[in-house]
Image (cartoon, rainbow, N blue to C red; front, side):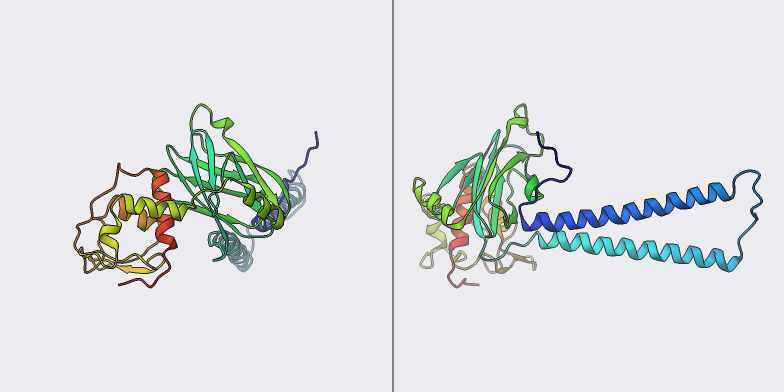
Length: 312
C-alpha cells in the first residue's frame, strides 16, 4: 500500500485550498518555533541561581513590545481572514457556462442526472478542464457530498437546493463519500467521480440511454399540475408570467425585493403565500405534499430554462 502524507489534488479548488493550508502550516510553525525558542532562552538565562539581571522592564520597552506584538497579531489575523474568505467566496460562484448536473441524495445512494437526461447511481462522469456545477437536494435526511481529491464538501439537505462547483484538472477516478451520518448504511454511501477527456465524455454521454432532459420533464409536469393554466401569457387568471424570471430581482407585496433563485422558486411552489409578488393576489394554492424533491428539481429546471423577457 502506498502511503502519502498529502492527498492527491485534482481540481482548481484543491490547489487553492492546499496553498492556504500550507500557508497556515508555515505561519503556525514559525510562531511555534519563535515561542519555543524564547522559552528555551528565558529558561536558560533566568534559571535559578543565574546572575542575570532581574526586575521590571523599562516602561517604554514594555509599552512598545506590547503594542508591537498586539498589532502584529491583529494584522496577521486580518490577513488570514481575508485570504481564507477569498478562497471560500471564489469557490461559491460557478462560471455562467458551467456544466449543470443535478444530484439527488437518498438513503443510501447518489443519483446524478446530466443535461441530456443520462442518469447515474453512485457515479459521476465529468469532462476534464470544464467547470461543473452540481445542484443537489436530498429525498430523505441530511447528507453531505465529499470528494477529498477536489477538497470539496457540501451538505445536501431535504427540502432545499444546495450547490457546489469544481473544475477538474487531472483525469482519473476519485472517491466520493457521504460525510454526514445518515443512517445504518452511511459508511456504504459512496461512489466514484470519473474525470474524462472532453471527447471521451462526449462519447460516453452520447452512448447513455437518451431520456427527456430535466427541463423537458419539468415542462410536462408544469402542464400536468395545471400551472400553465394560470401562468401562461394568455391566461384569464392574473398570475406572473415566468419567462425570464429566473435570476431576476422580484418586488414583493410587502415591499421587499428578492432574487428569483432556486430557493425562491421552490418556496413559491410549496409556500406561495409567503412571498407574494407585488401587484398580484395570493391566489396560488400550495403544492406541498403533491410534489416530491425530484418533482421540485424538474419544475425548477424548467422555470430556469425559460429565457424569455419576464413580465414585471
